[in-house]
Image (cartoon, rainbow, N blue to C red; front, side, top):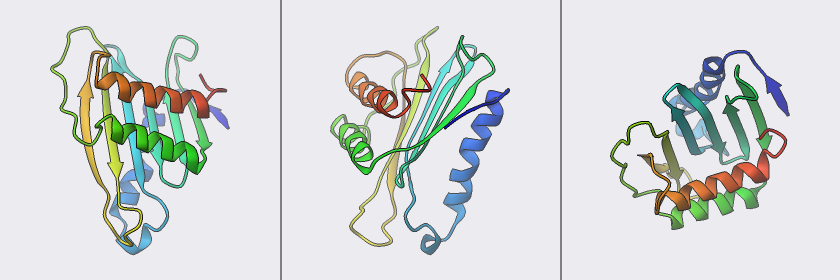
Length: 159
């Protein structure tokens, strides 16, 4: 489903509010849904892309570019196989342990927050890691490639 909107900040607020209210719930209320990934791509002129992925397949992509300077929000429900592929790719790339790169002037900044949990243990709390990178080089290139492949497979009508 594709929804066009006028302001990217409103899109970002819509994406972050569900995860904030979700995080404030008691563990017994969190059945079936947890945050897997948040990606924010920021250029010198502001945020250009935010991807949010949940364990139940709920996914949202907010982006602003030359084609949509006011911004747009696309949502999708992705398959369990697609989620598993993304998670495995990010784990193999070391997304739970990567250190942030030193800032690079005039380079876009990508902030990745990856959350993993023990799906087999009932009530297990997910753990996560956030890192920032600027240059498309290993090991960050492997992370970016996995995320871009996920976007291409699940948001073809939005990009």
